[in-house]
Image (tube, rainbow over all chains, first blue to last red; front, side, top):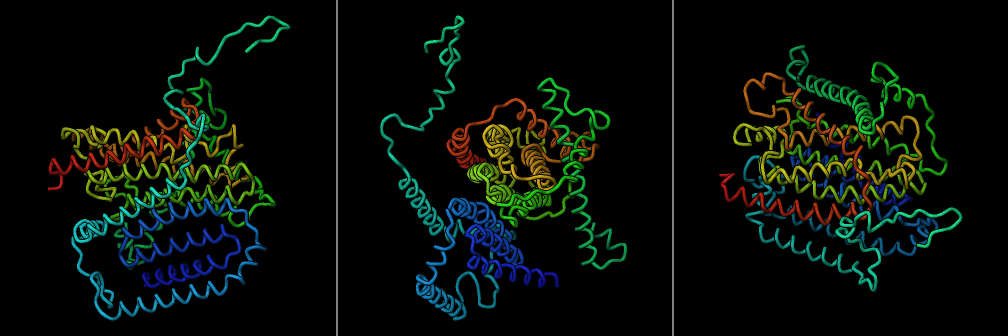
Length: 207
Length: 348
């Protein structure tokens, strides 16, 4: 009983907040609704017994990705009139993307129904996993059967990371403005930085 | 506790529900009381280090100072700035406070004394503690005022930076303990050093990780020297600037509940939780919860000691420490520790 109640609670909240992500006027509100949607997705994961995935969803998406979204969106200068003006112009493009997504969804469910794939079955019964715990079974699969794919994913992410660093790296000319040499700062002694002066009254100091 | 309520004649579901609610209250109320007392201790420690007296007027030795402060903020008017985004402005302190309490669900106070003894307890704590940034970011943005906004920006960058290295340190501990469950992590520390010392700190490979973890937990809870989010010389009071009365108090309570959580994590992950410091039979006569609270309190003292003695970091120093020192170091230790464990046949 309580599982059913929890499922409908999470599912309804998730769909409602997903709708609010796209209907909210304010982008910051959109991101906050998105976070709520992630949360409820994690709740659904817990309900199907995938607690490791649920925790990863919260740590990675809510804890890191959404924070960066919020970081960027907060700094936007929001102009509501401009946002609404773009709506009509982009409407056909939006419909096209929605149709593509719908087609993919239908195809995906069709393919899933059509026959068994390696990890799951249409009835929802998962393929037998190694060990008892969630974490161990995932680890055992990732580091044995899917080792190559796992490492390849790592490489793809590494390339993305290097790309992001290269894109934002600027060669600074001249005096390296903004560069801090921590070692030099730590080595500095009081007598290199300060001078004691005893000025006579009525005269200034030459620095 | 479910068994106890079942013996009163409730069905299993109802007994479980009542036991869970009772457990939540049994953790939350003493925690709030502990927060009030710990604020008093904090102020007394700073005062002693600064050669002042600290709070000494309300009650004997000023013990009731925190309660007087609480009553004061409770009776104040909640002021909402007219330019603020009202809903999010009010939601932010609630998020901070709730998140600070939620993480305590998986903390074991003694053998078996834990509200939710889940498999992925450590990941749960990591997930919940990564949420605490939202309260700050939301309050900073919703206040619609420039100093809170700067503070929110700083908080977002700072907490992500230090969470990465905290994650790797937790991986080191998990590798050694072989479990994400906090109770099992504590039990794995029994007799870890030469068979007599309980705790992972007595280990040449894990001790540096504890030091990094301690410093990162200072950064994660925004304590001095990493309190750039509320640097009063630059940002008034940071994200709390526009808050008053209970909303402000919720931030305050949440902050100290988080600090206590980080202290208890230091205890659980590296200093053997509820186990006595030395694996010697007479010490087990003392109840486990006493050892746990003593150790947590010791770490809290370290937190206030640092607060009273260390100057604040510059922002670039903070980022450098997180990304250029702690991250490579903890990443390196993950490799070294997993290599050491494989080479010595830890898992066989």
